Length: 311
Ligand code: SF4
Ligand code: ZN
Image 1 (cartoon, rainbow, N blue to C red):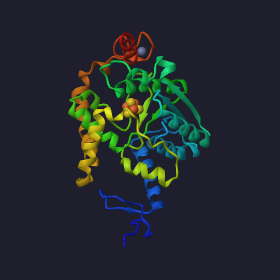
Image 2 (cartoon, helix red, strand yellow):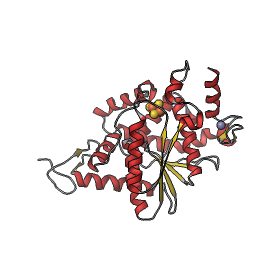
Image 3 (cartoon, rainbow, N blue to C red):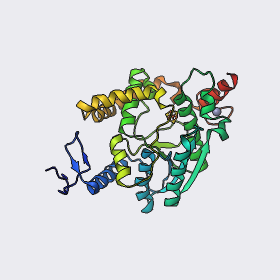
């Protein structure tokens, strides 16, 4: 009979192929929380007194980040707040916003909902109705980064925590590698190192937790989450890479860990060799329109807004 490899309990909820561990409900929750908190210490993701702003979509990843960071908030190690971005995707975003607000209320933390409309005078649905060449995720990523950064400053946050998990991070590594985007590759990591005071440090506490364990964690902890997928996600190259990695992982259960470990070992050399070539890294000025950090006259969000008006 298969029993929990930690406590011997008879009912197991997960068998981890990559490590051979089998865990019961309690040991899985405890082990996962310990692993994330250990990574937070190991990579020095937070300092005592930080105000951490969680980018809370209401999806499983951000809800799990909030749940674990809340243990540091309860022990007065950090202050905690959350922001939810409403991109304007009909039939999708509404439930996530409601769930995010419920979690923030339950924990008694400051929470803001910020919309694309209030800052960019448009919604993602309206953008996608235009004859643009760019994909939804390109606009969404740039606008969301802009909002997150602005919200972090407005709310006095010293760190922004996002819910990127092991699958997301492995996808990012492969995507940028396959696209030959070395500049983006050098920026992948557990913690960002911004080149402007106006950018807030971003942290990824779930970077070493596989997506399926994140899903199991929120179910095991009985946390309400928004499980629906974004209607635009199938458009992206990222989802193709995601399918490819999932397929490989079936017969090679350690493939995501080895991709991440290998990349982390290579990254210092990549940075050393290439970062001097990236002018953006060296000289960030300010966008002449919105004042956010920008490598040229306009930041990317303002370039996109200008393009959209001309379509
Ligand atoms: Fe935005 Fe793309 Fe994510 Fe949808 S899948 S929320 S469009 S980044
Ligand atoms: Zn701008």
